[in-house]
Image (cartoon, rainbow over all chains, first blue to last red; front, side):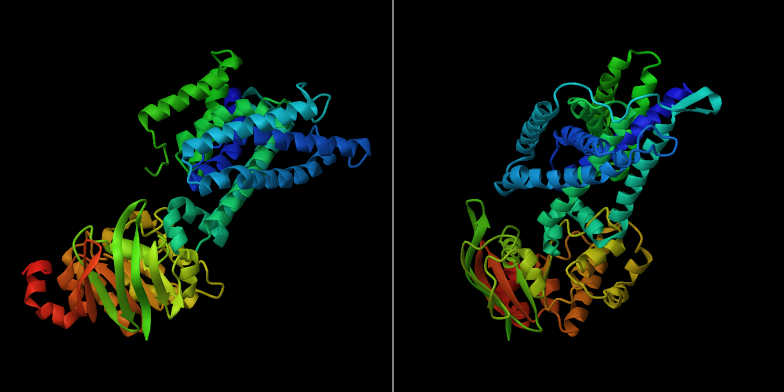
Length: 300
Length: 234
């Protein structure tokens, strides 16, 4: 059982990281972005492409410390993060911004985002096919902790990177003028306008952050498991469950919700088949909606 | 100088016309109030002046410049600030962050202005780290005014500052408004509490059904019997 909890924290860290951007977009634009999971897949695949380009030219092929992956993949994270952030901004400009201008309701945006999700996934199938891909091959070093807990060394990396990224975003939102303005827009968009805060500019910031974070989450998930076109789409359910548990726009809520979802899913495998994991997330989400629809840290 | 001039403005929501050709003027350095019953169009007027709503017809001039149809984010940069009646703070931000957001468009050092605001509203000083959503109604109103003042506006639009407040708080709010006016801020306020507003104002308008019913000096209005009977509950 302690081992399952540790696995849950690893998975929960990735869910938490992925859900921060999702709840930020939900808070600021009222959009429940169904394409978030597939943007995650795109981020993971971009890192794969850049990483394999490096290995073809034999650039940075040394392994990083005790981990399974090489320096090339680590460096490939950077373009993947930037491209994913840029893609998020472009999707907003081409799809959601026109909808906002026409005064479309959030349900229209929701349905449009399902379209974006299918388009992105279709693109991945076209470019990379349906096969599984791996960032690296060979054995994965293990670490033996007290209480008989075995974890992969890579999972330590995953947790450290996920929480470092979360802390960085948290500090950005808490300390910088732009971060505070983002929270102000999420809080009260009408008053933000009256105070001269350009809402559209803040929305661009929100998408950039969401795109960057979800790319990191995708790459970490890729290190933990493998890359496949459906990875993000399936990952969307625990992400939604996490932000519903946390409450609209609440970063803290998303982090707590993400950890709860990760731990609940992994611990459930003590009694249930692993293929029921998404069902566990779904049941938790329904329970939250029934008992406390505004979420734990919700505003309403 | 006439700091604000509204000429024959028609405005409303969707297809519902609320203001039917309204003209008003606010002289620099004065406190001018717009009185009238619920639904008279007072809030609609402020929202139209500040660009939250676009005027359907007519012109609005601020410091002799045509601002009709400009968005709020442009108007706020010209030296006008607006305090809505409701939802006028950022609830999940701290008091201090609310004031910082009030100064969002300023690039210079806002520290000294911040201290002036805390001096004007000493109660806020002790709560600067609290979330604004946890403040009492009176403190929220103080914070809302403080937020708008961060930009040193020349003209302050104030929507029903006394709503929902206990009488002693209403007095405190009007006291601050007069103090600000002494410092040179022109105030255009909308109020249902007509008697209270007139005591602080230089001039006043009475609005009913989207049309101007009366205008004059606050003193004349306080002395006028018919206005007293109809609008001041005498």
